[in-house]
Image 1 (tube, helix red, strand yellow):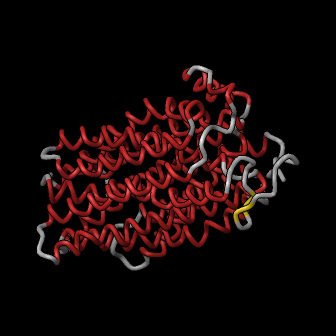
Image 2: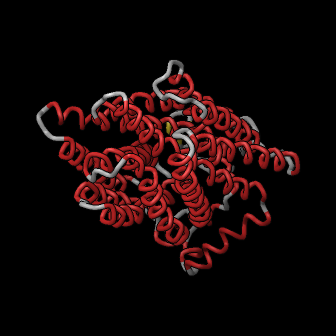
Length: 435
């Protein structure tokens, strides 16, 4: 890396064509992007119950239908969007994606039936596919490899803060609107529209602040989309560490959707069964979810430091082990309001964030510089498969076995990836982060 200038953002060494302003704009966007992508799923039980009046015995299936719709769209689009990021630049797609999901937030509470809600989720998924792919690509572009783990850790902390903002601040807005005299339906509608406004503001920051162009230069920009996408997939055949990164993406998004979708649904149903109002149950779910994110915030910088010191496959093993333990402990709990649930959620949050960050660091290290968009598009495709798997099987387990069933399921998947990471670690040479 001798050709790199000594431009830094605090302790983070930046890539040669990235300014401090570019990095700060990305960190701002990282705070809100995951918040805005996950908060819609967190509010979904409120919409199903208060707005559409879907029976609680059918809400698991409705959640599966909505999640499946989004992930099918993402399966079809994340690869092309990743290749487009290599052709057109990250800034354009990031900005468009945020504006797109903002429009989705506006439309979501206007749906009058489940079929209309599915159509709106289809629309929302197009923007989510843009953001999910480009955000990971910009994260890979921004640092020099010597600081990749540190930036991933900082980004993960900001993303965790963003999710906490969603569940601790935005999730309490229905309760505040109810206190002002609005019915449940309107309280949820106003909350989602505030989310839309945040989407548009964050999109403006991306347009003004992110780096223009692509880091790979003009040669890649002339290649066809399908060729770029196919190249991103082929690279994993000769690089099992990159293949492990794709597998980690599969399970990390599955982890995220299980807690973001099924935990709020579980808490909503349990709270209503105990006589709580919908806004109060949502606020309680938000507080418990916030504990999980708080644990991730504390652990994130520590994990980032480890990722710049250890072989990143070793860190993937640590992450999968933490997640398998945390999700199994929560999933085997009968009452989400039982004593000790907070500690279990904190362990779960540590594992959830670890899987996301460890996979991102490994992908960023292994992806060729001029193919990062394509590689991240394939990784996002794998992530969409993970969500499709988690929402489909998780929804069935939620309705037919137990509310904690999706958590038990994803803990088993994390354990399987842990074994795969151990095999890769044992069969490939040690790779330290580049200095």
